[in-house]
Image (cartoon, rainbow, N blue to C red; front, side, top):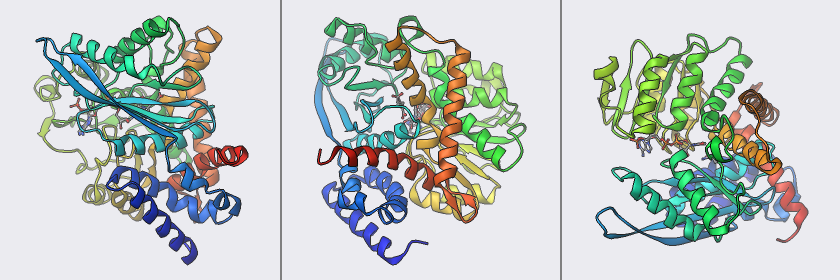
Length: 451
Ligand code: NDP
Ligand code: 2IT
């Protein structure tokens, strides 16, 4: 329970944040998730953070660049989209974070993602600050050539603001290996430098092995730690996943390797429930279909069996562990109530902020452990950090070497959550992740003085 002084301080802080960032719901939500623990447990105990206005400064991005991206479609008509880069905080290292291409993005979404990224990158233990960016460009239905022209046009402007010691973008929703290659090609052409200013590159030109798999694998390594902690392994556990992109498919791959049961995948058209469970052959089919041909999940049931639920999410099924790996706010309070009722014990947030605040409350009240995004999905950016290290050293590590480092990093993140997340004899991972991520950034900001 929060004491009255902290409660009133939190309310006042949130009031000011909402006034200064009017209508930016996702940003308010992400900040609240962290502030509800940072204010009572850190600021209250260490007045120097309050005196130096650390939380107020950390909730104001260093800068946000918004720009026009003009490109030519295949029929020769000119199109204009909006590009964004929120350079959120570089207290502990250069700005680092993904680029998202999705029709519905807003500045609020990039600010929430930049804030999350700052605390997440801190948790990895690597020297990386936080950033996020992207565009309202909708890749659906675009030809390869259109995507290329768009990526080149975006980079023509973005290149002014990034660099290997300034800001290092990577992928996110709608930005995978193909887009990173187009972006890197244009960056290299403009700057005439072959440097690691983007991560998630193909291993053929400077990318790290395991980067593609890292977010999903990392989520499963985290799940193993949490489940181990409470005794027992992942074998035979019934897992419900959303998404059918980079994070979901590599989560599924590692779960299958560990003999867990993967019951569902989803995309923006609906979800498939495979009662027999996915197997490596079906997964390879979906990977080819979704990641390479960018199709829908609709024909999965016809091809492999199971049932497709159009326009629905998979949260009403009985299961042990849930991995939401599609997008923000995809688990709402009613979904959370259904998950509690149907026996779910653990939620590993693969996507960024997939649970609403009400959903988290319902899950926690129902005895479900929630591992928040900034801890659960940090494996992706961690291996991006390892890609940067390899680029700087001008060498490549083997799959085994990178995978072992990823496992170690996830283990360390888990330990930090346990260390800072003690709660009535158990572990509150949301509290632990937010406090541990915050303290490191806050100490650096404090040391710099008024900058
Ligand atoms: P992808 O673009 O590879 O896949 C996204 C998946 O989610 C697709 O199946 C997509 O469906 C579905 N999806 C996206 N938006 C919506 C929506 N509004 N409603 C329903 N379904 C949706 O992205 P990633 O797998 O890379 O990213 C997924 C999540 O993981 C995001 O929250 C991202 O921020 C987070 N993340 C990603 C990391 C990475 O390394 N890539 C690292 C850490 C976190 P469809 O194909 O129909 O569009
Ligand atoms: O949300 C995330 O952590 C990412 N999209 C990965 C960012 C990165 O720089 O690898």
